[in-house]
Image 1 (cartoon, one colour):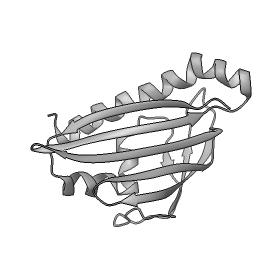
Image 2 (spheres, rainbow, N blue to C red):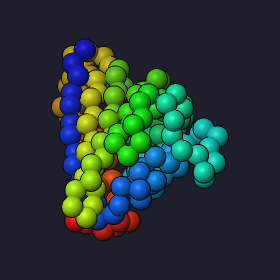
Image 3 (cartoon, rainbow, N blue to C red):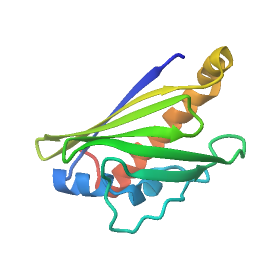
Length: 154
């Protein structure tokens, strides 16, 4: 299994409390995800915050109208520093996504480190080169744009 790593950084002109408050709410994920049939299927209230062990289910349509279920678990949290989500069931052979937060000057630096693997061996590696990596990059570019619209830019 080939594991790929992508890193994304974004500076936000907001307090750590505001950043953590937004990103630690599973409900806000839909706000920063592009239109791809993304829908949270877990029973969550608007007041729900992440905690280690919470399972979050989604329906997604990432490519060619194919509808998929995806289940992630929040495995680690250090409030105001980082949290990690890992796929338990879904389209990837492996998904480990770290979200790091660090106070910088008058804002927050947010760093995402994504480690993922595509199933199906050599076919998956070709699919990653042709489709999957590009789609992930599109999703994170959209996310960065949407976050800048919500909070502004540093």
